[in-house]
Image 1 (spheres, rainbow, N blue to C red):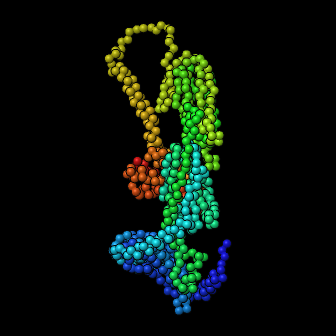
Image 2: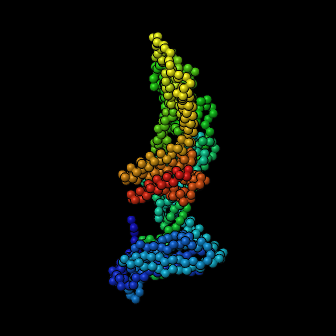
Image 3: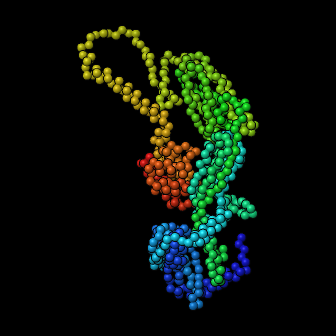
Length: 613
């Protein structure tokens, strides 16, 4: 609700009256487009305000600023409308201003700007700027003081905090950390992440945010702030002592109100916040680090088989079948379900007799976040092959974890599993491992039926021994065996090297995810589209660069790519796309053209990196 003072009402009425009364006079003015600077001669390090003013017209279109190659653009373009009276007639003008700073000493030319008015293009005259060496200590001190004062004022109106649900935990216990942005100042664009926290000492898992990223309100020290949660992590400390949750850093462009130094009644009128005379200012936002006190797990009564599971869990174990024939496989399944560090649970140790061949377990995860708590299940499947008939037993095994609610260790003990093994059907079947110990292949039969009839014998007249065919048939099995042996060894080595497997399959997996993103693009599902693009790029980079998920940040990815010879231009494009995906949920609805552009750039980046890495 906007409340106007009597002064505001008076000036607003005057302004409206003047617009109606003098509109004809405004139309009669000549249209001009000029450029001006607040000073032509400056010292190195000083700033210049460049203003391009369109007068005598209600507005133009397609404004194009000159190239500021010799200067650093600190802010702009900042657009402002104004009016003045000349010989009883009112003139309306529109100005576009920039604050720039020279890169070096010398004489430089600011080229012409252009704008279209009623179908006609207007251009300004170029301006020459002379930059001299140095500036006085007083000027530098004053400028530094002004910048510090502005930075302090902005910092009071926009800041970043990391909020944790607890600051004192056991080793392995989850800490939920939320990075929240607070602001009560206008933002010119969405913030971009400049530095993602390293979170060293923690195993971390990012918690999925709601598809519709909301903005809430909070009162702090009597002031109301907008609040948005940018990132949320489930952190599991991996060592005891004091661990630090590192800061995140954002680049923001905020809109700061400017005032005119004039006693003119209309300048005072336009200085009213209602008309929003603002300039864009770059500002970095960084939160303070937060310390977590990590307590060691109690050593009293700690089970010997304890491997670090912390939380609240239930355990199930069963055989897929209890009666098989010799050399037939049996699968023992162990499913651990609950809340806690599920993904860090290690496989229970299973001991079997020499009569049962046991393979390393396959692991299946089904993990989600319930609220802010990581929960789900981890299933271990042990493939076993009893080799001899009879009653075979799998002894009881145990699994222990630290129960946070009871502050004590719980132990699950399985029953003994009994397998009734029958004699095989007179055919000896042999098994061997292929690319992994879990995958077992039946090689064949080595006993065949022997005929009892007496065959008639006669001398052959063909001289087969010593012939070409004889030598071919003698050598061919050896060559075939050698080829198969080499191929199997290469295949086993390939699949045994997880890093190599991920590297080879990275492009294929990324392509599948891009296809999914294309479907979301066609259905205009913005949230799922950006999420799938992010998964495609991060997944591809993690597999290609062999970066663990816990260390997969934009900063780490960019530094690794740079060390591998990827151009800075490609790295900048990648960083821009990833940041666009990060902040998509806070942006207004993206048009299909923007989403199509992100999709094309992602596919192009993957193709470019595939040719380099």
